Image 1 (cartoon, rainbow, N blue to C red):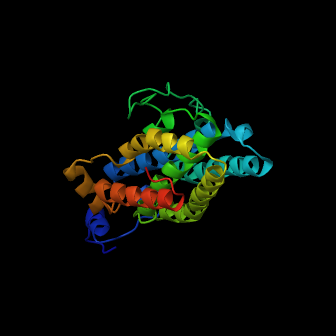
Image 2: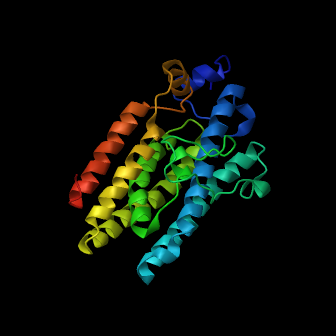
Image 3: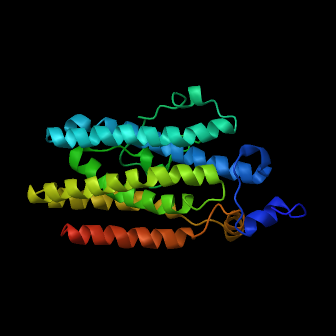
Length: 251
């Protein structure tokens, strides 16, 4: 960065930051919010899936579910270590919220259980058995893939690097979900899967809610956002439709 260039100008031209000491205060706040949302969502997702491991219809399914729980927890830890560099109490963090807690299943779409827990709102709803868990894993996993695509491009280089390591793992979780649903379709569970898609799809969609244009432009100037939520949501919907078509589950 040139000596006479402000950090804001440097970022708007595609510059990267590499440690907490030189980040502007507002940038720092937005970056920490992004990281906390990722960590909380991974921990809450892992906790929810842990509850259905033994609902798996066979040993292979239970091993796959247990591996997802392990890997999501490990993914959370990778970003939590970065939060620690910004002063977060990482030793307390993982136990500071009841990650298994959920709202009643019929709660209004977009509801949040706690304003202090930064998990995505979809992770406040409970799973209802194995078919429901695998269906949710597909719907949610494809949406997470869209968000990870954004995070791999952020201007805070340590976070971008961590997410590049995480992204293939999360992609594999989506592949496992589609493989699991294919087996369930063969077992005559198509109607149950369709019912779960109808439940989860509108609960995942708020992940791509509107962001005020002025705020989005500021985040883009800082290199913290690139595509709009509208673009991300459209891409997610198209990917989910393709997955459902491959499974012959289109309504």
